[in-house]
Length: 303
Ligand code: TA6
Image (cartoon, rainbow, N blue to C red):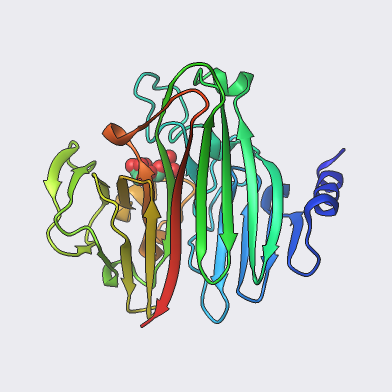
């Protein structure tokens, strides 16, 4: 069955008339398009990747690059990439894809459920021969996203094998801002972080975060909600979380943005990544049969 047929079949099986439709997206990739009273949104089966969430009466909350790739084997630049089962470069294999394999492969659409004015989309990916080329574990990973007046993202991992596993994960969210130099990030005052722009030196955050140069930090042992204050778009984005002990904050600034072929040269001004994660020393161990759920809840208030 060709892509169009597959998309029509997926829509026939999972579509919710007037609320959720499976359609063809960029690069011919299938996506779920949500149009509910509370929000409009989009989620690609490629990487179970949320690329848009606009609460009704508000503006788009997520940033997606105009230069993003839209193809199997490549990551979408923007939205919410799912980094799994490792974060950044794979410690023991320099040839392995950065941020794992979950974001560059097609997931299965499991269900679309409407509850009131909110819509929950679940997508799943499981271990197979190609995942085992990189990572030996047996697993089942579900990305369950509820689109409503809030955006709730849950990563549910089950160890389906007979051996314990250890994994890293991140909901690598790209938030759209009016101008990065005007934005402020609160909620990490006093937290320690590893500065990836300075040889992973361990430092301590004092006060709010102002972005005035390339910023790439892993905040450690923090469960605090984050607030992104944006005077230009007159809004405050709040990211609360559960079962996540690290928060990554990233902006590539000028030079790094120019080095990224899938990011426009000036687009660094319109984005900041705030990543609900468990990485590094906070990687998660899971015994056979066990399940772990990490959750991020994004909400918007007008200033
Ligand atoms: O989350 C921050 C980070 O790990 C940065 O180091 C930067 O590389 C960014 O992710 C983007 O990674 P990508 O593989 O998507 O180019």
